[in-house]
Length: 194
Ligand code: ADP
Image (cartoon, rainbow, N blue to C red):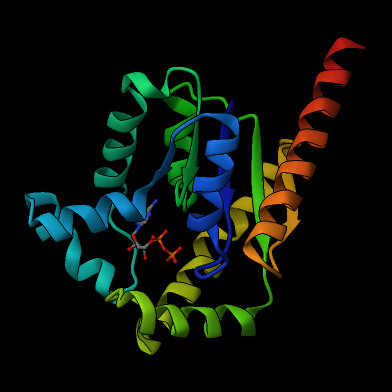
């Protein structure tokens, strides 16, 4: 099972990704978390990406594609994975395609834009993520709208998009995702059998 989860900053991708991955017994891989971990540990990669992340801009494709390729080649990814935060632009879509990784479904978490900002500002208080301040949030939203949101259309055209309402309690959203994903996957299998 190879899945992508997409959504605007604050849509709850990370939270839902761990739960969905556990449900299907696959690793959840978050490029944002990988970068944050490297920053926390002060690795050369962390040093390289910190300023860009704090500004809310995208880390270069060269670095990001390599990180993902390395991670997906590890043993625990043999039976599948759920990618959270990648691909984020058209170049990254091509990189994933060219690496021969076929995706089974793309979960799109839908949340009202006003709610997103409120969630991010609240998270800033709780988690203290250095990119959860108003200026950076604005940039991240702009980057999302310009570069990442159009990918939903790309995956819709491939017949892979599963849109899920991301409003409400965390558990509720997880149940909704699993229900819609299962329906989508069994529908697709049905079509293949027919
Ligand atoms: P959010 O979706 O809330 O912005 P993420 O943890 O997914 O949070 O991403 C945080 C930051 O990490 C991004 O703003 C960007 O700087 C960097 N990042 C994560 N994934 C990618 C990616 N695929 N390509 C480039 N940069 C990325």
